[in-house]
Amino acid sequence: MAKLCFISYARNSNLDGRLTRFVDKLQKQIPGHLPHGTKPDDVVFFDVRNIDNGADWMQRLADAARECKVCICFYSPPYFTSEYSGREVQVFLQRLHAWSQLPGNVGAQARAIIPVVWVPHDPLPAVLKPFQIGPVANLPPTYAKEGLHALAMRKSRSDAYNAVLNALAIDIAAILKTLTLPDGAPIASFDAIASAFHSPGPTRYGAAVMVFATPAKRAQPFGGSSIDTMIEAVANRCKVPFREIRVDANVDTEIKNSIGAREMPVVVADRESVESPNNAGLVKKISAALDESSTVILFDAPLPNAADAVVKLRALAAKTFASWKAAAVARCLVAADSDTFEAELEKRLKKAKTELIAADPAGKAEDKGLQAQAEAQGITTGAQPVLTGPGA
Image (cartoon, rainbow, N blue to C red; front, side):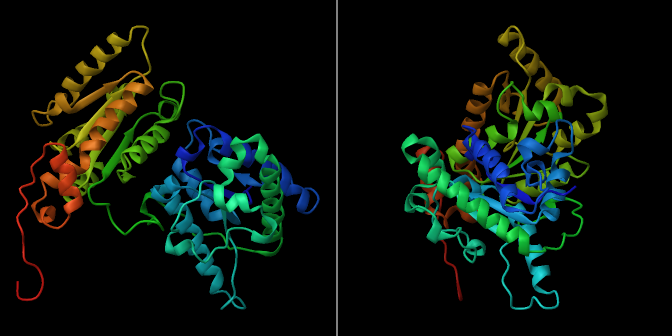
């Protein structure tokens, strides 16, 4: 059975679990404003609660986005840099467009996207400006100014927090009672959905990340945060845009496309996936497509002796990526704990933009900010003035 509300948020906004706790409270409160018999479990699709380990999480996400009746968006700075959040919103925008074309709906307005100010962010992407941030008259002024996360952190703000919770539950229930949003068409590939927050195509001078890991290792590689959460956190700290590439039969083509689009390919893989005979073909494709701008991070759950884990991973790197260029092992980073994983990824992402601009003659004289970043890290771009425009 499809849920009623799709929770769209950035994982990096939920590192302290407060967003999860708010969603749990909202889920319990909404049924009190809906027809008798509505169960809390029927109300919310929230990936941390509704996608089991081992499930095809991307397909579950796509199905929920095309079937839920409303999308509750938790606004925050990381939210608007997330490709996945942008794709989720895009699915609902497409469904709203289909609704507006139905007989009797032409020219009408529907509220299927419900913003929640988790952490204030300005300006909003243009596509979201038509959607009002809740019933403003019923919300405390501290909410719009400080955001719901700030209210959740302080006991002195508990009255304001509960006022927002109650107002949102009433507002969401009222929308659910009146809006009949048609299901979206089946989504063959969630990756193929264009993010509502980003320009079409790859992001220049960013990272194209491939996570090549079993679902269990991807969800809890070191018994804590997921791989996706750690990547998102590091990318946001480094202010490096990133997108994810699926590891499938087309992965080598996607890697080459990302290199051509001035992105740094980053392969994040666990030992089990790399060593599996069933994945030999994929490993070969990945290895053959990488170039000297690429990065591989091999990780494994901690062994009793962390040094042993590092030795084993380095040996695996030397064996697996032998066909990669001479820099393969030197640029293949290894991690046996979350701190090392984040530290190694941060080192590479911090240099991603500067190294890419240094190797990109076409952009050297056009982006002074990137030139300055490169020069600050000792990378001489050698930019020369160029003439552009008519008659150049």
